[in-house]
Amino acid sequence: MVKSGLLLVLSGPSGVGKGTVKSAIVEKKVFPFQYSVSMTTRKPRPGEVDGVDYFFVTKERFQEAIDNDELLEYNEYVGNFYGTPIKPVEEQLAKGNDVLLEIDVNGARKVREKMPDGVFIFLTPPDIHTLRSRLENRGTESEEVILGRIAQARKEILVMEDYDYAVVNDTVANAVSHIKAIVDAEHVSVKRVIDSYRKMVQED
Ligand code: 5GP
Picture 1 (spheres, helix red, strand yellow):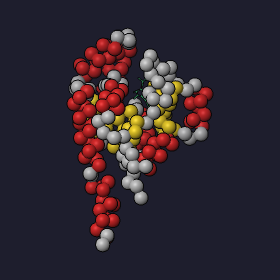
Picture 2 (cartoon, helix red, strand yellow):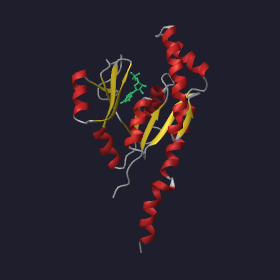
Picture 3 (cartoon, rainbow, N blue to C red):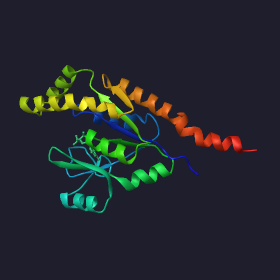
Picture 4 (cartoon, rainbow, N blue to C red):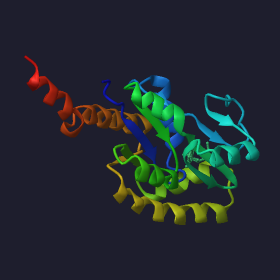
């Protein structure tokens, strides 16, 4: 029997840089894994490719996916729906491949309920001041929206108690190297390897 792959869930508060860290892991192929492409009703941004960054779908198609139980989890975020198609995740894990999800904290909570064996990694800002300047530097939101997001992030940071690891996103390179260390360690954690050693000691 093939050993199941690891389900790696990268999450954290809005504005912390989850997308940037995920892209760095994907582009630099820091460790072998399959990225779980989410389904979304949001419109593609310039440069985003359907089936690579997201599956861009209509609200009707998204609703159909919900009704048919095609999603491991889904959530609404600023007026758009985002969800994780379950089939590719299950197929890849069964083949022994690690699967990376980059999702918001609500989605991660739902995944934890269904797949508690996953590795839940919480990305945090170094401090509130840094989060504020990152949100301001995006230059896309009003002061009121920024204050709202900071208030939301203060609450979301404490959600980390439901996670296995907290990784500070001070620089992308540091965050990526900590995540690689976590994945390497998880692959040799006793609870994940004990079954293969039980088999080994029974061999002639
Ligand atoms: P963006 O629109 O900037 O690509 O993503 C917005 C938010 O949606 C980010 O916090 C991202 O992590 C989250 N997100 C992306 N895909 C999924 C998903 O499949 N499920 C959930 N719950 N959140 C997602």
